[in-house]
Image 1 (cartoon, helix red, strand yellow):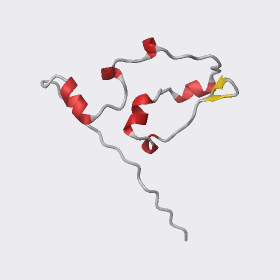
Image 2 (image 1 turned 30 degrees about the vertical axis):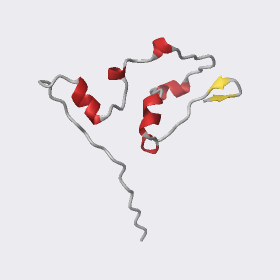
Image 3 (image 1 turned 135 degrees about the vertical axis):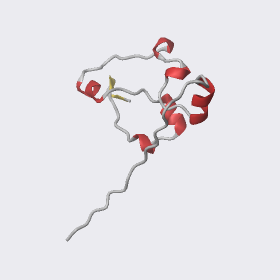
Image 4 (image 1 turned 90 degrees about the vertical axis):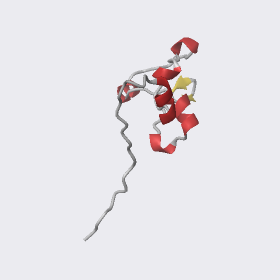
Length: 86
């Protein structure tokens, strides 16, 4: 996101994005938020091949990975916080 001609980072919860948004997401470590980035540009060379991009669909994993290779599937979901006031 650009604000005043400068590149700004937008914090968004992953759970609030749909699949197409996730595929277009430019993921950065939180430490990069402390650095100054004023003229950062992205081109085709910056894009990872599809097999290295984050957030694949499960059926894509089964198609891309060798059938003799095992892998762990970890499903996470946001938990509701229950607040008890006495």
